[in-house]
Length: 167
Image (tube, rainbow, N blue to C red):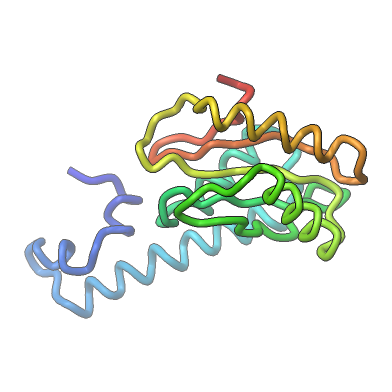
């Protein structure tokens, strides 16, 4: 038994194992999942992400299907609307200073007012690692004397999204 979201994100070969689902139907189901996720993200992007719940929902949907250990800076305008979720690294972590430099560069280029650091845990472990806590503090310190508000560090798992300091 799969959830609807799992079904929409399944491999087309897996979908074809079900009775009556051929290659065309599997492709249609796959495309419906992609377009549904995009529509949800666009709807979230039109309205301000004013609280932890809204930010968590946006990030959870954005990270669906993304490679393990993807680190992003969610850039928000002065009204807390999404400008961009800029990818800082994928598959490996880099030095905290490098993340800070990338965040400052992206925020400046895009005219951001607020920044959320986010990454996904491929192992589905909810608790932040020692490195996660260290990175949060480093980015908080780097942004404190800049025009960019640090709005938290979010961790995304296959089943959840939460702000690092909420744990």
